[in-house]
Length: 268
Image (cartoon, rainbow, N blue to C red; front, top):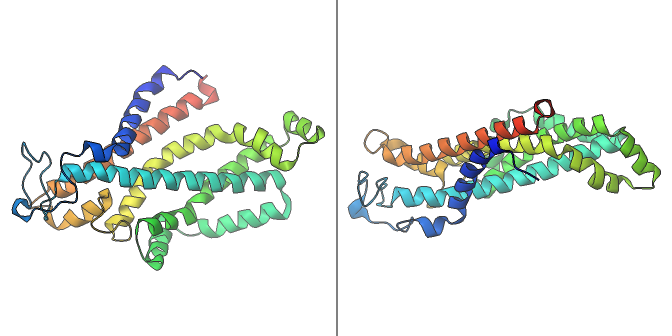
């Protein structure tokens, strides 16, 4: 498959972010967890390019390692909700009947709650922590993909090739895996690419509220929470992870927009 030329710059930017996250421990100039109170709140200089925090830890090193924590958690969460939601929606659309009604009514129950409010309540009830924060977002995040997959399946389940597969003796599971999922993958992939930036912000938001990653874990939202009281005296402590979130979300949103343009049949 040939990659469209217009997509290459955005793939390179996103790939760079992912590579930084993968090799983060090898790229940090200092130990991100080593404390040196004699250098606490040192302004950015030639040694500590982004300064140090209240415990004397190098901010640049923590931002780099934080990319691994934030991106890995966000990608795993996205993979989970896309897989579970798409499977539920595709099954409901293909099987129909009472199963379809039950699954869609269950998704309606979750959709009745504002997503972030539900996530805050669920993460608080589960006791906080990065895993519990991701679980709270997963509990409500699957509904979008279930609805999307179901709608796509309803438009293609009466197509001639589906009827031919049924006449050839293919089971519903075989039809789902071999014919349905490959034909709905494009729109779901675009939605997932656009959703990654939102998930990063939501996880960082829960960590900022103290319901996500716990100290001393280097995570962008938790770093902003730790530095919020020093915005006027040591702004680099909170602005550095904030800038990392902004750039990462912007890059993945641009990638999603361009991917949507490339995969849109109207533009071919």
